Image (cartoon, rainbow, N blue to C red; front, side, top):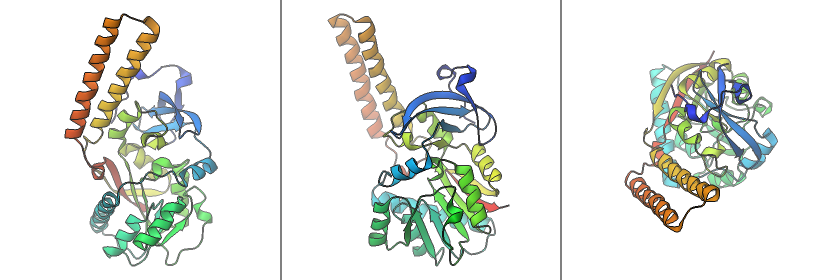
Length: 325
């Protein structure tokens, strides 16, 4: 389990909160302007090792934000990821002795790459996706022929229309970390689709959280995440929502975030350099020496990052297949 860096943590009671995933004590890690919508703080749970933000924007603000602000990767990357997810899901279903997938439903479907891949690989004959971004829905319909509906994934999904046929698998891929109330949303899925198995994929908090502790920019991909789940935290939220984990697996390359961590360390050096100048001043020679040192470090980091680049398809993630209890 991830251990949070002690030097970044205050021990005061004001900087502690209860983790809603496992009930453990969470400690404050940093502050940030979350999504450019609200001043928030990041907390790391000492029991389950997950991270969450508090306070959060209200659901209406999140719905408006994600209509047009979802990050998209090149089509070849999304296609490769979707087919890899289908292969994993097919294997997991066989390993679990689950029946054939008669109907597939994805909440937060993006442009519909997974919805389309499910049909093309004959995993299911019926595949539907729901997505908040109107532009993504239009693109998926026109370019992939995906059956997509526009709608925001929230805890009120039980109020949405009837499905025919009723899905045997409900999926959420890199969606849970963006939700205001993930536990309530999963519980609503359990209520709305009582017989459906659940397929989830989320970033692996073991590898992601060290980056989030440093990356507090609201326009970065990390800044969009309201939650970062450990395997323990993910199992806790599934159980409390009415699901039993059948298979949980870590996938991806653990070195994926190394280049990002190196770049953030360089940014910190620049910030420290400017703070020192503002506070202490210094002679021309001292300024030139320190600037050259930071510049050389930045250039060497850029070279290392270019040589050690890892594909987005290797993002460290947790994949889960779960049954309703």
